[in-house]
Structure formats: structure tokens, C-alpha cells
Image (cartoon, rainbow, N blue to C red; front, side, top):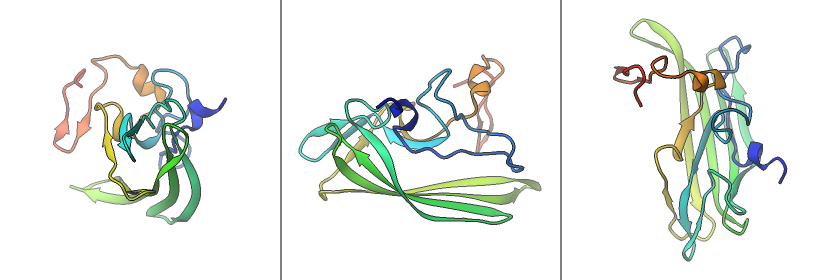
Amino acid sequence: PADLEATNKPFHHVYSPDGKTLLTKGEATGLYPHHKGIFYGFNKITYGDGKSCDTWHYQGKAFQSAKKVLNEDAGKDAARHRVAIDWHGEDGEVFAHEEREVTIRRKTHNGVEGWRIDFDSHLATTDGKPIHLDGDPQHAGFHIRAAQEVADQKPPNTYYLRTDGKGKEGGT
């Protein structure tokens, strides 16, 4: 329980290509301490026979736990990490099992070399009943949290770089 803030959901870190600089937030401090690395969760989940929980904020006894590393491999141009994760509900019971894979590959696009991160997840309930995953945009789905120094910047110094180009400085 004392470490729940830091361990309530599995997250994956991203380092610079030389391995020296952590590019994602790692510490449970600063602005939004429960947002770290690359992570996946929802703050409005319903499952079973009308049960509900929030695995994002670890409300009640809800959380996610990394159970086992299924596969790891790395080379000069790619790396892959596959893990088994249990999702625990309102009473701490396991209501779903997830297999998650994070893959990073060296890529060239329009003559610019960079890295691509793929995130794949398969989530299945333990009882075979439907599950509803929901939440607001800040607390639902797949997220990547940049290092704390990015959050410490105030608009207009920040912008989003999306597939359609650079967003407006200070935009959301």
C-alpha cells in the first residue's frame, strides 16, 4: 500500500537512443504524479454484474499488476517487450487479464530518421462477460507522459506534434 502511488499500473519508459536520457516521466512527483512513462488504463470501468472501478487512479482496491515478462528481445534497430498484466477491480479481485506488447523500431520518413513506438494490447475478462472501458480524455486509454520538465513548461512554450503537423503553441 505504501508504494501504490508508484506501482498502481505498469508503465514503460522511453530513453534516448544512446540510453542516457529518460524521455518519459519516471518519478511520482510534480504535476500529475500518477502519470508516468507509457501507460494504459481507464477511470470508468464497468464489468461483471454491475461492478465498477478506476484502474487509473487506484480508487478503492482497483489497480493493475504486472504478472510476468512473456518475451524480451532487442537489436540495433528494434526492441520488443511483452508482458502479462492482471486488472484488479473494486474489491481487489482480478477481473481481466491483459497481454501487452511495446515495440520500438528505427524508421525513416521523408528522409528523417527517427523511432516508432507501437503499443498493442489484448484484454480479456476472467468471466467472459462484457467489459466497458471509459473515461475522460486525460484518464482513458493509451498515454505517454513526457519527462517532468515538459509539464513544467507553461504555454506558449509547449505544443503538440501530431501526424498532421505541429500544433499551435499553447494549444490543447
